[in-house]
Image: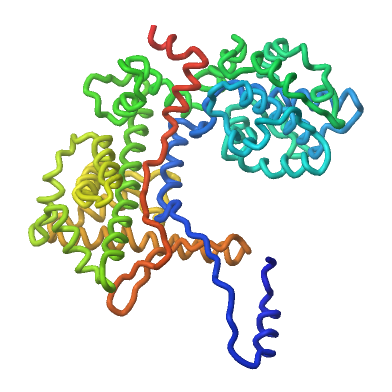
Length: 504
């Protein structure tokens, strides 16, 4: 139903001669980034693994999409079309992407390529028609979500890793740089048998049968890379085509990955966080090591603050009425077994600073998984003490005070070191958890309203006369650690052959 304008609402109200029943308000709730802390995590990740995300874990989709754009541009040139006609070129690339993913999905191969769920209704189809209204609707529906080129999938990496660049005239048109030609030539040689098919030889209507897709699948499986694809991908990760930050961060990660015994990404993460006493940082990678460690503690801090908000909401939901901050503080102190009247230093210094951040993260996760969430307050208290102990002194260029930098939290925590522990807990609950949440929830709601965006209720609590009250209709908040691209980096490096090379 279309939204009514204010003029329409006022007109209806003026004409009404009595009360009337109104429709139930339909408002979506959101628990994504409730305190506005995650962007800093991503900024820190960009200092050690820029260009990577948590989805784009395979080399072949990068090569395939880059090849599809090159193929589209060459066909346009051969037909005398302008190479800036984004509508035609994007349609061709989208068709290639769908054929690629559809063929792999119906082959029965287990893969983590995006789009399987969105394509579920087509997995049993005997053919796919790439023309008409149905194709246009399907293509537009997946463009920003499940397409390989979407911003949430391989899209950012295609450009930041140098597989594609923008056309100077039309930014929607992407152009493979000459550096990637050898990799694309090698890939194209594998699929030469299908280049004459209407789906790949022109821009007009095309139909691909299930039998054709199954026959084509094996030649472009993600695990069937050419040597040229591997070589080019390696250059983008650690070689001459990598940024300095990515090259350093990846080399340190690969050094850690080469010595892991059981293939666990947790072992790599532990080494990068400085938890592994046997891990020695190679000369020249000290800056990358410091950045990886800083990232791990920031990750822990974000997780602890969001979990503190979740703990607060749980207490409010269990209460018969509003709770003031003093009641919340007393409950937290009791559950965490902290002497609120004693100095905060007893709590902060009572946590061994050498405690691995991964174990502190695991303690919070274990408590959150429990229905009663027993032990959550103690796990949060330990994590906050660790974060304060390892808070940096110098700001990053991207630090914003309204995103609560760990540097600022450490300064505020240490400033209350000699005050009663109750005061530090009060500050953590009121300022780090509640104030951060209210600021970002209200700010994003206003931004959506001004821009005519989605109606999403992000705010989860309000202040009443008797204290804080949880808003009704919300789901239980259960934070999760932000993925840190380590699995992506290891997967890409393994496909490039970099891990055996490092291990040797």
